[in-house]
Amino acid sequence: MSAEQSLFEQLRDAIRAEVPVALATVVEGSFTGAKLIVGRDAESEGTLGNPDLDRVVTRDARGELAAGRTGMRHYGLHGEAREEAVSVFIESFAPPPAMLIFGAVDFTAALARVAKVLGYRVTVCDARAVFATKSRFPMADEVVVDWPDRLLAAVGGELGERDVVCILTHDAKFDVPAVVASLATDVGYIGIMGSRRTHDDRTKRLVEAGVDEAGLARLRSPIGLDIGARTPEETAVSITAEIIARRTGRDARSLTVTEGPIHP
Amino acid sequence: MKELLDDLDRWRSAGMAVAVARVVDLEGSAPRAAGAAMAVSEHGEVSGSVSGGCVEGAVVVEALDVLAKGERRLVTFGYSDDEAFEVGLTCGGTIHLFIEPLDW
Image (cartoon, rainbow over all chains, first blue to last red; front, side, top):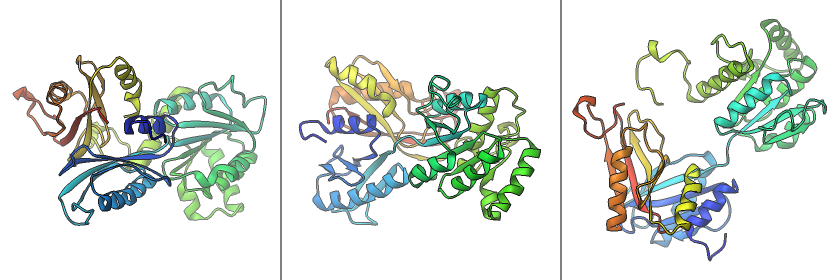
């Protein structure tokens, strides 16, 4: 961050560079509008008008940023907890969540397109160099020629609750190691494509590979919601709708037959 | 905020004053989460949104007033009955917006 830049310019550049950053703004209390920009490790920039308040909010903003949360917090004038003199809005700008798609098949391009609309950073991975090409998947942020378990061994540690894995290979020799490696990560969603027969066969092989009940329960297989999807595009909607429903904890029935607030 | 950056750059480099409204808090069922943002240029051009289209018109008026007076403010929009033609959210929730000039 450059000292000659305004706080807005520093924030803007961090967001564009996909560097995790939080913006804290006093919205009520003295110094309304005062701001602090907080990175994951670097010194914070700006001030909320009091050094003690800055220190407490920097600490809290780092926590919010790590969790990808955005919301209001209240403090005393010097950052005291359980006081309400100052209201601070802490906004996290986390990098986009990742979708890893294993298998460079027809369904992959449609899923990658829909995932881009939803704001995912999309990686397509397949060990077959002839299929995993940037020209077949121009919408993907990254096309990797490698075995899924090797890619996951390299990047799996960075994946979290917001990230998803979709395994579209429906070939047991790719699927089983990919599932096992995905289960070793903290991703919030693991979906695996295949017919019910493929699913049964794969489940057997997964158990043989040492996947336990808890592991099997984390898997969405066959992948997607039961909306009668046929085309790759419809299937992509079925998969992404399931990803949203898993995140929000909804059972994904039609709003027509449910009650209560529409927005979570 | 991210989706506003291109418009904000364009307006700033044209020397225009800009106000940014952000959803900072909400109660009940609200269409957009905290952090949803909308920018209004001094000429009344709009980028982004803070609800499902329910209150954006009123936010433009507030934002232009913020630019005219140069003061930041919290504005609350709550439930409104559709037939009353008043500004508010039809989904039953309440949103609190912080509106301020982009002078930082």
